[in-house]
Length: 244
Image (cartoon, rainbow, N blue to C red; front, side):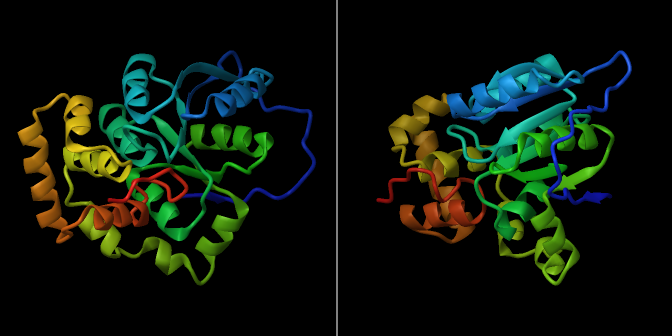
């Protein structure tokens, strides 16, 4: 495992090119303007090829299975299916995919959950395009990439907090794929009827899943499930949430 620390240096005009082969990239983010900006910038890189875009985790899973990109640039906080759960599902279907998580947050919990999901890169959205492009190239080579601040913390006294198995992992790892989808939709403020339509299941099935989820986590109110989802990185705290 290699941790690459990106130093603040001038943006070089030279690009490392892979002979006769570009790196295929899938971009996943629910913000149209953000995707458009990255799309235009990636087009300027001779060795990077943007093969598709998705605006939520479910679309990302489907597109990775169809397009088989080498690298996926994935936002965490997205509706319907968040980036971390999408990462897990993608790697189950296409283990060769290399996934870089982009997020507005760099808290240890988010970094730890990103690593546990199988992501090989973690960058804040504030990172420069240069750093993102370099990260894509490095993960494609088989390296693990974090921004300098996170790598410094990982190398220092906070490594233990990034590596140890806390309550978030032990409880979250017990959740099924359906329960992960359910808790995200609950945290996003969707009612049982909306969840039933979204997941394509019956209302009574949603209610049973919800009861089982609360019993499993020993949480007995919607607000508690929402706090758990935020703390676990299932949804980002900056997302618009309705707490009942």
